[in-house]
Amino acid sequence: MTQFKKTFLNKKLVSISFASTILFTSLIGFNLPNIERLGPNIASAATATYTATDNLNIRTGPSTTNKIITTVKKGTQLKVTGKTSNGWLKVSIKGRTGYVSSKYVKITNSSSTTVKKPENKSNVAATTYTATDNLNIRTGPSTTNKIITTVKKGTQLKVTGKTSNGWLKVSIKGQTGYVSSQYVKTSNSSSDTIHVVTKPESISALVNKKNKLPENYVPKDLVYTSIPFIFKEKTEKRKMRREASTAIGKLFADAKKQGVSLLGVSAYRSHATQVVLFNSYVKRDGYKKALTYSALPGTSEHETGLAIDVTGGNGKCAAQDCFGGTKEAKWLKSHAANYGFIIRYPKGKESITGYQYEPWHLRYVGKSIAKTIMSKGITLEEYYSSKYVAK
Ligand SMILES: [Zn+2]
Figure 1 (tube, rainbow, N blue to C red):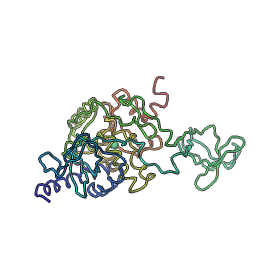
Figure 2: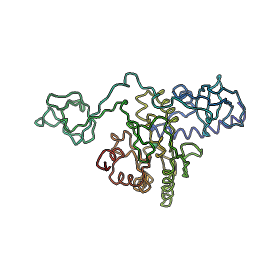
Figure 3: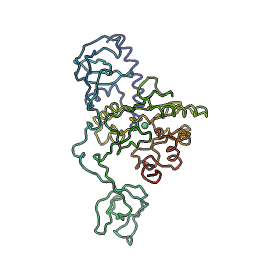
Figure 4: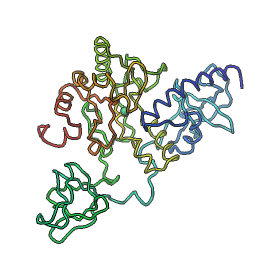
């Protein structure tokens, strides 16, 4: 190993392991091995294909000042094992590690459709039953039967059958009960029913587990935000769409004037990055478990360039539950809407948003919608669901 490379790698290990710990923590809420150790997993799990778009030099380090190991021909498929903070790709070639400029590499098949689904699950349309009002669960299929318990509006029910008079048989706390189907809404939660967002460039686009961005969508007006982050590198994670970037700059500046110091944790995340991340989780934990803590590529709001994870000025509690009680979190809850941001995944709305409470995840939707959502204590899903939007 050359002296330069050693120095570079040492530096890189420190910065990447810090940044990746934060990134991973933000996704799953507990620590994962750093990206260096995940490298080989990413390589074998990623379904993206990397192809040289020109004759391409593979170098000993991530800059054109490094020595050329070998040159591959245009059209060669590369085995990419990682990415450096300056955007070069780490590749494995003839048993060695090399670096190539990502400028001359085309990524294909990196869409969510290439994420492997478990064979036996992919075509099963699972129906979800949700109480549309506070709902009595009874010992038999009529209102003359005793009430076992009452579930709150929004509760998902485990329906096991249907009676001839149209009541639903449900399983609750190990018991069998009956509910009137009048107050139960059915929805299809199968992955096959995910809708593709028709106007992904809309500032108020709804992106969630059931509404995904079109294949390979890249926002056109991404810019580097001016705000400080918990890391120093100039990476895509600092980027947001122009309007959101201006707004987050104002929000941070005004917060500071009021004695509230904030730091960015992670803003834009490209589709390709999300694919590599998600596939590495699938490889490690299986598809089903990965879905509980990581967004399926195309369904992460971070891919819109309109979302940002933030934390307090001391950098502690970055993307962790403990951020919830801080003065910074409280300030955001009462002021974010003035800048066009909402707390996207509020407490108590998990069944609607599909996400755990994330006091650190801000989504830009513009001032008008943000004020409606925050003042009414609703979510973006609820905003679109009915009465709040003129149809
Ligand atoms: Zn987030």
